[in-house]
Length: 263
Image 1 (cartoon, rainbow, N blue to C red):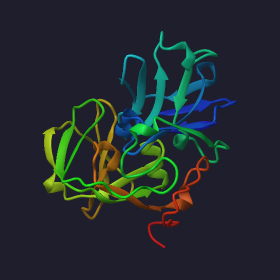
Image 2: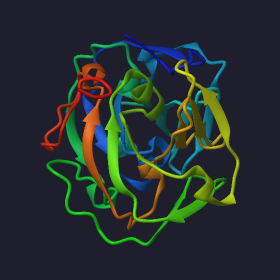
Image 3: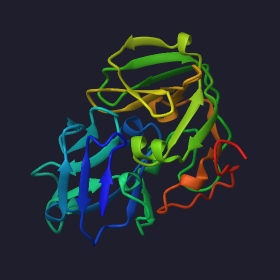
Image 4: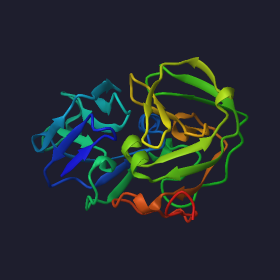
């Protein structure tokens, strides 16, 4: 089975059997993906890099590193470091990879949600989101801290996008909210931009690969909800491009779903 980033700078193959998908809501996965991350895994002996010209690694902790494409910012891999807790890899070294980066269909399914206590406050891992919490200001950052920013709150309505582009780049599916780009205050800024086929541009951190924002061709600007610290005052309100959703998950939040941009 073949997978890739959005621009083709990283291409890989994995041979079954593949572990079913685990969705992680820890702050690291949220910062990296811009919402939350999902991963399948395979023994490294059944993982092959076909193209690695865009591959960049970031040491996200003493225990693991994360792989992303330096050209488009796609969040692709998570790998325990040698000497990490052996209970993570009882059968040998493993590579964890985004099922959203695989060519569809995958035949996989989500079997668990982990670190749910660390989720963003604008959604629930399972079931409908709770009411938005008060928030007068928003503060966010990428995973490594090279980008730190703030703007007035609350976050308000958050929309999830399941298009192929958003899935490939985020590593699962994206969640973002509209913002005034001129109102964003940057305490630290190190951005790389990726020009999408539709004329938009995506901003991500070139050091850790965290997804940060999207500027549409017409100038509309949105920021990734997962990049912000709680409380946000946000609430997930709906899903778009469900016609391109991954085959490994099913939504159970009872929110409106559009098959394309709008129905």
